[in-house]
Length: 312
Image 1 (cartoon, rainbow, N blue to C red):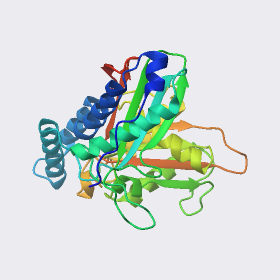
Image 2: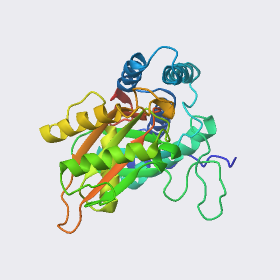
Image 3: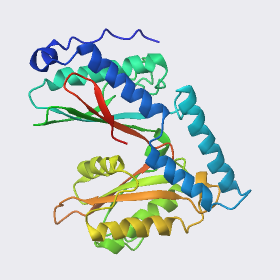
């Protein structure tokens, strides 16, 4: 493994806000560790609820039992929940007077150190050569979404999205004659359920879907992943979308696909949907699938780099 680069010089941050360079760096590492090794409680609650619906001694019940054992062991040992620690997706709100470039570099260096410590597997490879530099740092890795705001603290959220569940994401352009989907909510629902059928247990179910109606091809996928930052037990503020979310989850769980595709009643743990404006000529439905190892965490961090509270 390549040696981890030195901690970046973040004196620009320190000079403007009193942030400790080492403190912010260590905080990033702790966010990564917790995200990789501990599922948030709202996800655990959904897994436990799904486990109770599976018939005793069925393959679905067996799969859910293995999943819950894995969750417990990963937390106790502080080891990754899955061998594929996945794409590293940061969503960061930061005080507007700070230097975004310094914050980005701090995050990248924290990823390299977290990889060295074993909180992240060495998952990121060069697309042309296939070579792995052992740090998870390179073009596009980690992915950093930074947005300044007027508040004095950081809001840092992290999602680790494995390749298996990323592979079964889908994007539809409506109308779609293959599945009989028109440009309406009924057509959107057909897209969502078709995506579940096409996955057929791949992507390590039971899963969670993030869905965006509209936008363009790029913003649709980006927004669909952002839906996975929502809590499992929240309610969509749009009544029509709230109804769609419930209907799609219920319908998917009647397909019999079940945990890991072994059959059963728990195919989806939830569906999260939003809508973006679109051009009249386009009507995209973008679907991002998240596996049972629903690794997302976040923290509110004070101006000095200290974690004030966990967000999930």
